[in-house]
Image (cartoon, rainbow, N blue to C red; front, top):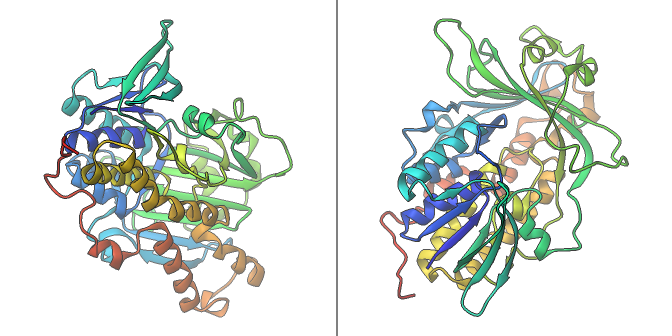
Length: 427
């Protein structure tokens, strides 16, 4: 009864910790030669934070991030369209958490090695393919240190190998490259004085050009500054070809994009001055994939971005990766480590998350910016003169429900995996 996980990112490492919790032997194979704290900030919604707390990680989260207190949409003129409390302040039983993605990955990695053993994660091994057999699954990895290929036998393969998943490519060979809709993201972190609550997620602009900002650490008492994540986005020509190999996640100079934001200055924030302080800036094309007809192939299941990469407009990509792993673990408890558990996992999540992918393609919770822009161009004195609060409130509520973090439903939900649950080896 063994599980092999392809991919040592957030989804794969959460899967490994979940397997350990329920008594299932697991091993993770990661393509990177060494897992490093790469990336920028991410937001973890309460539904995902709940799962990390259930995994015993509550004490580790404060070391790598900050509890989000507010979520705000701001018009191009610098005035609020909508703001609401988040996490505990909103009434959730769990906080929303803003963290550095790479630091979260290292926490998960450390816990996997501590709980599952130092050899539980094998780096420099890239998934090549898999073959279902009469009694299990044969998985082939490329040893990137020069050792050729390695074949591993297991009961199940959980493919958490991301955007360009080899497992998904084998499952859907005609799918092709990720879908680019024409939006480019530039991301980084920089130290700055707190704005708003000091723990606010703030999005300014419209659907074609916007700025996102949130802190990912506490204020340093010596300097009065805190580490803050930022993102600039601009829609380019969606008819251009995008090179998914050369054009993904590359360092770039701010001179390539910052001139488009020179007048993004308000009395409460100066975007160009803040962005210029970043030591490293990354360029990301905003891509997704059409929902897959299935995430399963015999004893193989896709999770995380391999299953449902989506536009990062609702702060739920990493959150859903964590939830995927926990739901799959719950199905192992119910059905055993077998294809029945994979089918139950897919039945529970596939249709709902496929709809969320398409909803995010339609701008998710920020789609309302398009309506605001049509009515006033983003400049107003009082948002109630442009759009009544109840109209905005209804829109936001629908998105939370679709994304799985509507407060009343989440607060009332039982644990995904009951405390102390273990897989019955007789199943």
